[in-house]
Figure 1 (cartoon, rainbow, N blue to C red):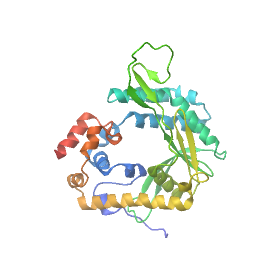
Figure 2 (cartoon, rainbow, N blue to C red):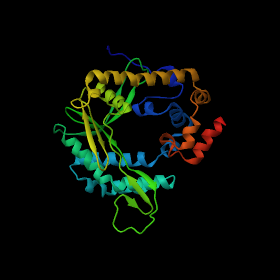
Figure 3 (cartoon, rainbow, N blue to C red):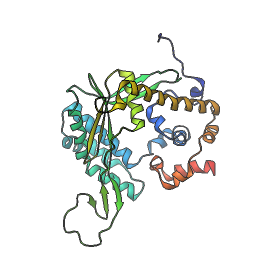
Figure 4 (tube, helix red, strand yellow):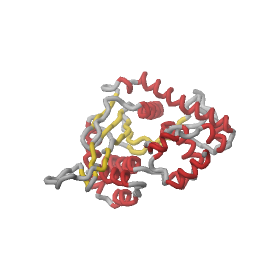
Length: 302
C-alpha cells in the first residue's frame, strides 16, 4: 500500500472519534453507544464490575513479574497493587464477594499465567506495547495495547475468575474450606478447549500489525492453557486472516450506523436500543453501571 495521508471519515468526525479498538467491537452496540456517546468520560470510568477490576489488577501483576523479574507474591504485596485492590467499590453484595474471591485466588491464577509463558521460547517481554494501525476499508485507525510482546511471539492474557453464590452453612463447619468466605462459596471454572471468537479477532489484529507469532494465555486458579498456532488451528495464519476480516465487519457496520445518525447522539441511540431483558437479568455487559446512570439511560427510551 502506498504511503499517503489517511483521513478519518466524516461519520466518525461528527462524533469526535479519533480511533477504534477491538474492545469497542466486542461490546453489544447498545452498550457501545451508551458508553461512548451517552456517558461522559468521567462517568465511563466509574462503570466497573469485579471481573473487569480484578482483570486489570491481574494484568498488572503478571506484566510486572515478566518485565521486573519479581514473584507474584512480591508484586501483589506492593503498595501499588494494594492501592488498586483497596480502591475498588462493589455495586452489590454478589459483586463484592466475587471481587474478594478473585483477589484471594489471584496468586494462583497469576502464577498459572507465568507457567504458560514458560512454554513459549525464552525472550524479553515488552508489556502494554501501544500501536496505531489503519486497515482498509475501515476509515478510522485501530488503537491497541498488547499485553506482552517479545522477539518472536506476542501474547494476550485472559483471566477466568471464580463464580460465587450465597450458601449459609446449615451445620457447624468442622474443617477449613478455602472456597468459602462467611456465608458465601465459590467454584472455579473449567477452561474452554477453544479460543473465544472475540479473542481471535484481537490476536488477529495484533499479529497483522506486528507480524509476530500468536499466543493466548488462559488461566483460572485451578487450570491453565496456552494456545499457539501449534496446538490451535484457529491461530494459524490463514485462519487469523479470516478473524481479522470478521473484526472489520463489525467496525464497518458501526460506521454505517454513525453515518445514518449524522452526528446526532439521539438518532444513534434510537439505532441502538438496549435489550431490556438483558438489563433486567443483570447480564455481564450491564453489571457495574451505576444505578443513576442506568436510570438516565433507560429514561431516554421509556
